[in-house]
Length: 244
Image (spheres, rainbow, N blue to C red):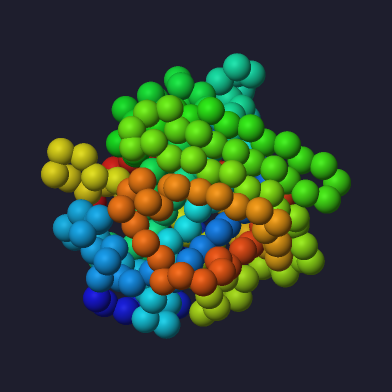
């Protein structure tokens, strides 16, 4: 596995020069991360992708959030399509010096959005029944996938003190500052760029969590309590998928 350096991680943060194909906002997002054995993750990834490591460990993450105002670059949001909930199961990879995200699954509660993302970005989206409730102190989130492999997630968390923007070479930077995704379709590897401002992070505290998402995909962590980060809002531009 080739090590990544700071310049590799900073260069991918530059905004692409061409116009994006869409915009969207991510709200009330919780990052839930566990260490993982890279040798156990390797069989779940396509050839060509290398597992990105921090201090010798791979990482698996679950990220629940609300997605708002999804729209093409030259069109307004459509209320019945542009707003929905999403939760993804992910790890971190790189390809020829470009770090990014590999998704094991992405669940959303808007069937048309699921169909579109699967068709255009070749991502493993699945339809799910979801609920998100927020009050002044805590956020409740539940997801129940409606197709196989069945998986559920239910958690309540409380946002905590502000941490701010993660510094380069920290674990927080490694986990959240990711500006492209990879997908695999018909024996070809693809990449799509995204761009947003650096994450403004907060600490978070779980008061309850139950999930079968990892087990549904044959994944396991190194155990222990997860590392938590929260962000209230992120506004994102997304570019077209391209072969690499």
